[in-house]
Image (tube, rainbow, N blue to C red; front, side):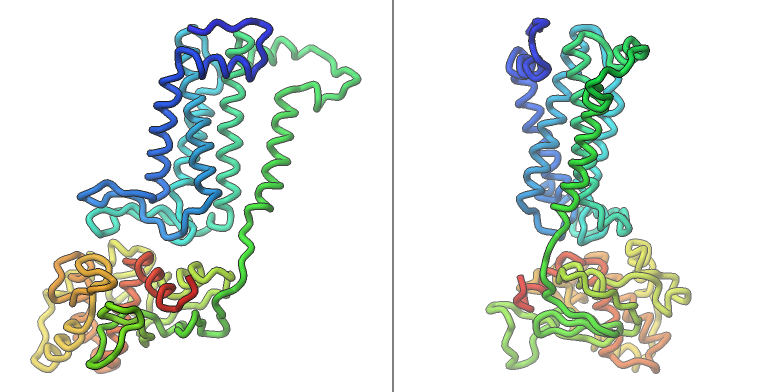
Length: 403
């Protein structure tokens, strides 16, 4: 086991521990943390059951740096903790280290486009943790999590380096008066916190995305490429008509605008086409029929379960004919089928297809005289955008040609 000389610097102490008998633990934990955080980032899912985090925002260079730095800091913290245990003394950084690690994990799992944490498995959403209010601050929160980890590592390393607890050091120096050098530069901890605070402000300004608007939104409508969407108009792939050519070679469906029953409040353009589609194509709030049907866009899983019950409704012959016409042309594009080769929902056994069929029956039976087939179809498409936000937005972006 590495023994520290009193002449070693703080960094030298940490370096000796990391490269000494704890070297294998450090590199092993680094690999494991990288794997864990890449999973939380939605870079991969557990095979066969497709269990993981649903992420729609692209993973860029800054994200890779964040994953590596957080993993490295957690690995250093873990090794220093093991070293402390072997030396039979501890620091006050244990709680800070655990809390900052959990905080970093939550920040990593949050998707700015999904506006929260979305857990999926077997092609369906298991859990959604809405974090829309924090979306503008995700980058800032990442920096905060890094700062907390750095602070935890500093406390633990300093405790090991001096063979005492930071809290004890503070109490021993409590009676000291400030010398002419100045309080901020003589107090190591205070100076460190000051540097971190300044760094947070600078990095937050640096990380604010600077993008040009690829979409336009005005009044009750918006557009992206050739497509228009609005408060009562959504976008969804539809099966090709006879003789119709696909927008993408080999695809059997084409994105088209559809009128809807519900009306959304349009959110002004953010300059990010993905975010604008999320705000104005993926629905939010409660539609006018929400109380009657017992559903809300803000709870997609509960709504899905309620819509499924609609399959048990009984229709008369005219209503049944109309229902068949709607559901036999509505596609499941992201679960039973694929964007290239969609499946008609009457041939799809997933929970979303069942909910769509139940929804179609409910609208035909309860409001069929008020709305057209196309409007009911469009409302079903609106719900599909909520259940499959990633696939919906990726497909629109792909056909709009702004990717």
